[in-house]
Amino acid sequence: MSFSDLGLSPPLLRAVAERGYAEATPIQTAAIPAILRGGDVWASAQTGSGKTAAFVLPLLQQLSAEPRGRGRFVRVLILVPTRELAAQIGESVRRYGRYLPVALKTLVVYGGVSINPQMIALGGGADVLVATPGRLLDLIAHNALSLDVVEALVLDEAYQLFALGFADELGRILALLPPRRQTLFFSATFPPAVWRLAESLDRKSTRLNSSHVSESRMP
Image (cartoon, rainbow, N blue to C red; front, top):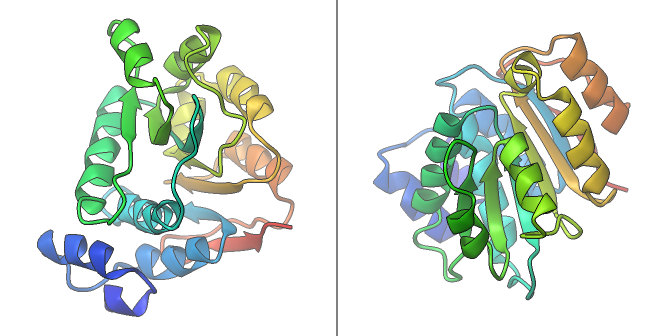
């Protein structure tokens, strides 16, 4: 299916075409319309399936529809297990959003580097924050940001978040998020720990493969 058939705006389609992509992958075809409708989505997607664009493109469209308010707030939070993946997603957000009429502030934060520049960069909040769980909690402890108005949460490579021992950190972060939000799970596999977390957030979710997503609408 062509990207132009998925309901994406012309600026996003221009960015996609610039990357040389003509046809959407199965996960993109299934996920993009569901996310644009505001539904929660759980998707099993392997590396190389186009999953990053599957959630980045519709989230950028939603963000560009209305301006960001003032304060230390974050609108979209993307949690990832490693700094390498955080950097990759941050770059994808910037590339896909380059032609949007509204400039969106995107920040990437992870541990292993000084926290001070990240705290300074978070002044005024962010439209998109890509973060590893530990560094996110460090920044919250330093009062550098607030999760009170997060509109969408993405857990990418969710199985790795658990495999690398981030279960406790995830629980603490989830407790700080507003109950009314869009939640997107992308994981190569759904082991029991990931499945239990998905079910605790949405009882309607079911296990899926890379060609499909499970969608439930927010109340």
